[in-house]
Image 1: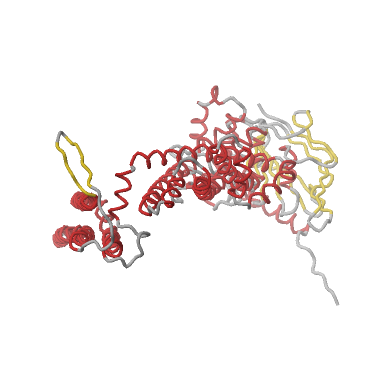
Image 2: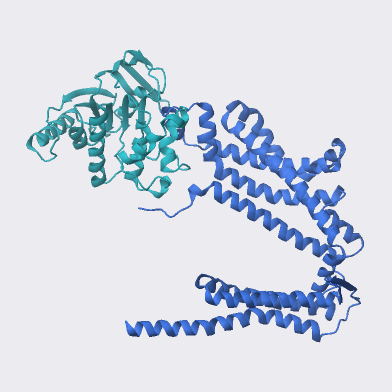
Length: 346
Length: 259
């Protein structure tokens, strides 16, 4: 017992040293990024604008490059603090140590991007603006980018929520009523393979506003996919489930709502997942081809002026926004399908 | 609150995938008294499940009629509880909500929801109310299925090999549970099984069915006093009789020779 205890104690001591090394490892990538940025001169013809901030009557003047360094320093501080905190929290220690290598690589990637881009111009300019320039896009056109992001969100929400409702609704009808299956399913199958943006010429002329036209395109791309899978889920409900409901006194409506739909739920979410990916594509495409706003529109507009750093800035926002939407859908899915989780007990 | 069931001259013919006529039930007559515990045994293909489904109203005969308390059976009704062989629980509902399904389906959930706790306790599933079907064992799942049927307060309980997939210890425990429930409510029970011991242990009468065509071959009165001892001489004697009958009826087909 005593020896066991000392071994355990030793292991704990080692752990702290180990963790300190991991923290150093995590932040060293970003330190390299700062060093690269400070030590290497700019070769590309990039002028950094000077911005002034008024905070508490203090006028702070800074250029974009120092904003980039501030971001790097902030990252270093965040990771250092979370690392030190994880020393005292057993469950977080492992995760932090696991993430160290990736975070290091992130810092190194920023350094390579910086040095290869505007510093020594290995990557073609202006297609590969430095990380500092992307930050510039957010500072210079912050409110404009926010405005376009909100436009995209609005478009997505309007289109996708209608698409889900229509898709689940039609899917239930197709799955439940053989007559509806006979007439509607082939149509769905054929038109479902056509990318939604192919309908754009019609949408743009038939709908009163370009917004409603884009909503329509997102609706149909979500609609067909979700209806298809919902119908499949309803049809694959075992006969015994319906019989069990019947002998317990469940009528037809009850069986649709409480047997068929719950059984189809996993399929419905599969449909929502894949329709979601297609909805993002349709959203950005339709914004690029005929919307007065949105991230796709912003990309297109920036491209015309060869402002590739703005294009990248919009792409970064898309990556974050779409990942967040996926995350939310994942949360809802987990909640609705919680009956599928759990270890099998004997 | 118990039903008598009357089956007269019932025929049920299926067509198999090759288009051949399969006589699942041929000229079946049976009177089940109210409050009786009756078992139907026989080898597979003898039509015992078909007969039970007809009583439940899940299937209809081509000819003949079935009556419940004198009225013809036209379709499924919650007054006849039905327990499937296995896997009939709704996987998306917790144990409690599976049991409550019948109350909700019949729109009596509000007035009768106190009963849910009673039935959970009755089948010994307290503490598992929130578990989902895949989280509990097969024996527990069948007890949920029985509670789910009982909560509708059926006048007849139809059981289709509810213990077929269980190990012998769980099965024995569930058999005693079933007897306990039957003694308490006095519901008419029709049990389909292929386990001779189970039939002798539980029932008042045993209906023996044989296949090709599916028909009732013999009905045996089980005149053993309850509680019954599985190892008693009279129990084993009855078992021997039934096995002998099956041997005489020769369920095993003779080999065919082609020269």
